[in-house]
Image 1 (cartoon, rainbow, N blue to C red):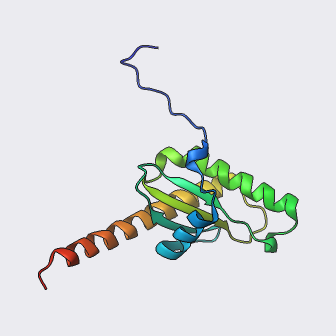
Image 2: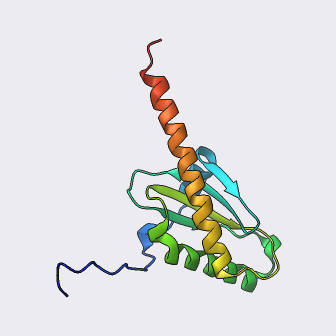
Length: 137
């Protein structure tokens, strides 16, 4: 491959891009923002890693294990395909809403829209807190 050519995007979902531990999930739930639409509820919190990580939570309200696992696979796939279009430096938890037949494209659109909305909200909050901390008391 010619070094002058742009590198192709890698659409892998490595282990480092996933929230795996209970403590990581709790940190996002406690210290983050949330936004939702008809397909997804997304919790987001900033991280210092420089890349975005994702966790998936599907409750038993969605049905038996087969259906829940299918939803998890769809959500991870939506993240994997959209990860290069999402803001970096966030930890995201994706929770599907109850709907009849969720499609991958619906989850992708919701994920992109909600992740950017939450990133703006988090950045505004960080800027406000930084400004408040620099003001003389």
